[in-house]
Amino acid sequence: MEYRSVAYSKTTITELMIPAYANFGGKIHGGILLSLMDKVAYVCASKHAGGYCVTVSVDTVDFLQPVEVGDLVSLHASINYVGRSSLLVGIKVIAEDVANATVKHTNTSYFTMVAKGDDNKPKEVPGLFLENREDIRRFLEAIKRKELKQNYKTELDNQKTNLAIEKELHKLGSERCDFDRSKFKG
Image 1 (cartoon, rainbow, N blue to C red):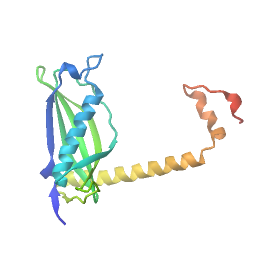
Image 2 (cartoon, rainbow, N blue to C red):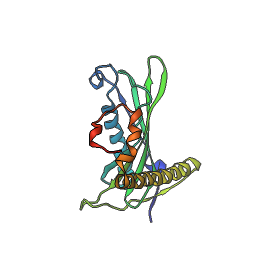
Image 3 (cartoon, rainbow, N blue to C red):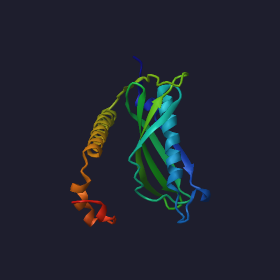
Image 4 (cartoon, one colour):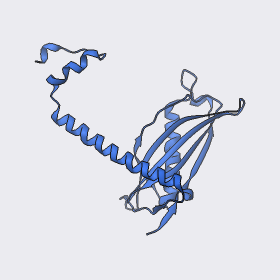
C-alpha cells in the first residue's frame, strides 16, 4: 500500500476579505467562509488522493469570532485521517488585521471528503504516514470523533423509533414553544 505524509498535502489558502463578502452588519458572511473552507478541503484531499474528491459531510462549524472586511483570512488544512476512500480534513481559519497587527482564530472545522475514480465510484486513497506526535494525536482524535458520530446517530435513530411523545411532553414546559394540548393525552 502506498502512504503519503500529512505534510504532503498540507494546504493554506489566504484571501483578502472584501466589502462584497460582507453582510448587512458589516461582518463577513458565514457562507463565504464555508465556501473557502470547502475549497481548501478539496485541494488538500485531492492532493493526498491524487484525484477528484467530493465533500460528504461537514462537522462542527463554530464561528468563534467575526471576520472583518479588510482582514486577511488564512485557511490551514491537513489530512487528519483516511479510510478506504474517505479523508477527514481538519481546517483552522485565522483572520489577520494587518493594519493593527492582530491575529485571531475564527473557526475550526472537519470536512469528510471521498475520492472518486473516473467511473464516479469511490476510489481507494493512499494510507496516511504519521510523522510525529501531533499527526498521531489528530488521527486518534478523528477515530474518536468517528465513533462519537456513529454513537450519536444510532442513539438518535433509536430515539426516533422509541420516542413516546406523551411521556416526554413535560420537557416542553421550560422551552420557548407552544402547541394544542387538547391533541395529546398525558
